Length: 250
Image (cartoon, rainbow, N blue to C red; front, side, top):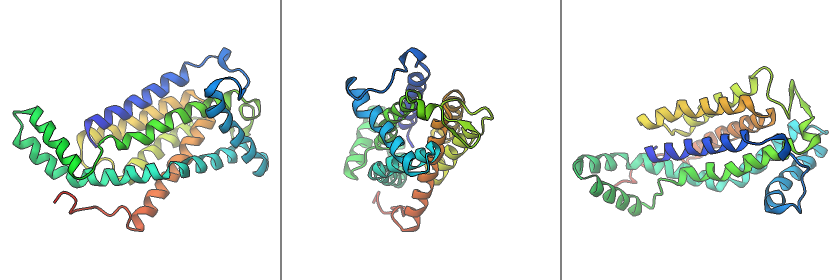
């Protein structure tokens, strides 16, 4: 994982934090699909999916969140598979990248040019790993509004939680942070890279900080989403889809 990718992902989380914590009660108007593109194409579809899922799943909005999470993750699956393959390619290219850095250590511009050529040669986009996170950001924000602007979801309880309020025992935020950490480990995003190791610590900490202040439903979404990704990655590894491409850099 490159420094640029780490910065991008941290920036995504910071923007998400500012967007969610900046919402005031006055903004929580009833969801109206005719009230602009945001409600029509983001908030209302998620609210509708939650309502329909809850009707099928015994009226439980907690289980509805699980169902909607699986649907969202399946829709994002092609992007996630592309991200994982890109990460494997980046790992395979690390020796070549290190040679370029050493060869042009006194000429950063030339090193950058050669690195770009290396990426182009192997059809690798170093920012592709950020794409799923960027796509998920509006989904999370829309999910927040779907919860807070829907009385049915906002007032529903699941296990020990009120889905429209923060977890009083901090159990779900902690689980969100822990599963975020485990997801990164299973996906192999660290690769003994100092920047990636830092990201491995910073991201769960930021998720924990955000989840403590936001409705439990979002923490529930994070936990379900992370668990899905962990299982998905393990399955892809077992089937050989993510076998290290040792010859990729040759």
